[in-house]
Image 1: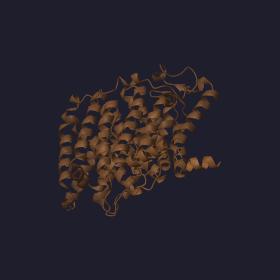
Image 2: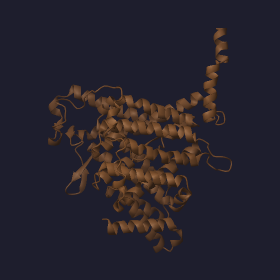
Image 3: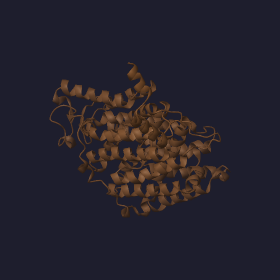
Image 4: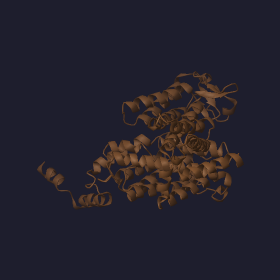
Length: 482
């Protein structure tokens, strides 16, 4: 026993060398943290944001991109971006394809505007290059300072409402209506439609479970909610007769002969050949179109403001500010995020961005890039879970989409609700994103409303040069590009 005790008190030269390397790389003692704390923080953040591995392929496969390739691209893009953040910026932040931006890519740029996914990826690449240029010059400060806070908050909330609408539509909770545009779907419906298995009640249950568990701070609330509803769907498959499930004409080609969901396994060695159809297939030349300028600007705006807000929030929670209030390493973290967006394009991802779920890891004690490296390695391991991703029913995953939407909508609480010229443009931005089914249109309406209200109420001095320029751009868009 005494010998074991001495062994623990006197680590081997190899162990000391490992600790010394991590200390030099991540400055653990300077940030008052330990290897164990950082590893647990990384696991906490990963479990909190791991839903993106399953949700991003579900959304983006609607463009015609292969689900298997998208799953691997999501894992690889998140892994490389997050490890880059940890090694270069030494920040405890996880990155992955952005929620909202993937929906804009799929349903607005490809589905609504009719561009190919290759051209849409080209637009993502160009927005990423612009983000990199802004991150290495003073353009970043100019952009952040020139856009009013009310419109920044509205962009986050609007993307949330946009996502919520998609989640409700895909679960079948709301359906198209010839009389009122949309209406409540049949909550008792269980079957197969154009996009796969449909179960509005189970989709809503997924959202409710995730919300309750998250409020109670249950570890892995999102994954638990998705898993619970998936198991319930399996139970229905085993218990209920095959003719219980309604199969539409559009679904007869792919619906199973019996049951609701089919078991496909849990683990499998990644087949990287699945990436070939989407790897570096961005059509950058095709994205050089005047009509795509608002799309590129939208990708850029949502990415940069979402990133800046997330990073500053994480910095505050992790005490990464010095005594003068300056955020240590913010410039490096923004550069890492912007470079990640460009790299992610190569794998077929929408803009890769910092995730606010990183705050969970910070709350667990994460303070350095070792937390981020841990997250990245776990995303790399996630590539082995493709069979599990293929097995999850869309309605279970869409419940998480609705939950994320509600979280993003909460940013509206930061508005000045006593000033009409501040909250009206923000509300206009938010609702128009969902009601026009376009994040770009929502941003355009918001900027135009903001400028007109400020000028019309004698507050034109509050309109920055950047807002004037963007308002003119969006007016021109509606005149010449609609």
